[in-house]
Length: 158
Image (cartoon, rainbow, N blue to C red):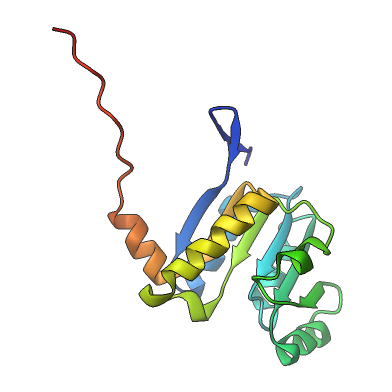
């Protein structure tokens, strides 16, 4: 996938999914062999492994120490790091230009967490500037399905 450009600026595309099946189904569609992918909320690395099969490089991050240790044991050929998704300084220490970001933060899947999730997406977009961010959030998907981007109608000539 090439970068989505609008008005001379790179625009990150957001893909909202519901459930792990949809989340993983996007991999074949959006992840290409030259991509460098960040998976945020990787837990034990199951999806990270699927991403690794499709891209040049993937790094899985999770806030939990135990899940990261387990992911490293199970998948020694993949890089896993323990860090907070909101710690952009830590994310930047990974030293990569991520072209795709996958976000699976179960605690941010409900309506009450949409503002936190949108804040995270805005931060990743502004700082990392990936082509695509895939998010597993049923609330975000439902909201996106109900939204229509309004555009000013063309003025009619009299």
